Image (cartoon, rainbow, N blue to C red; front, side, top):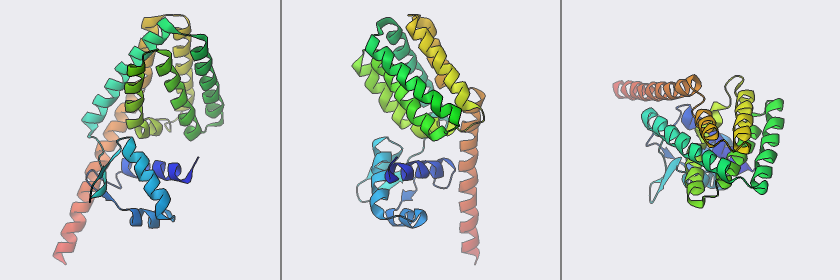
Length: 232
């Protein structure tokens, strides 16, 4: 894992924790001082975040935080669930030996990471597993749409994996999806993928509510600090 990629994840975590708010400018110099690195890997990390849509990179303004509202985030996950369902349905109909082998290899890698309790490695392998399903749909346009939204939601999907027992539960869900695709059961594959993305049920709701609360607290904290400075 490169330094820039680790910094990308650290910035994602800081944004989700409410340390940066929508509209905030991510200054390369300040971030380099915060993480004790040069500006080069910071710039690379911001470019990665910009390519995934997690931040906006604007002329003369630089990198701007563009975190979606909780409502928007839920809508994005809901859309992701529908897109992945379609991928699973088509994969069950069109599975080839090559795509089957790719899903199997990614699933085994996920298993190793899950048994080790390594959520970051699990997420990396999890992404490969989902991308293998997209390719197995044998619909290039659909696969491109799935990959683009997966990248946009990557930070939030990664954070979810830190929940207690989530790795092993996710692994079990992967196994169910793989079984359904191999059985050629289009509806079951679609349903299991849909449920897997939205899982998280209560965990997803908790994450969205937590994000909203952190944003409110951060805004209130900044307002209070500004008021105190004005009163001095």
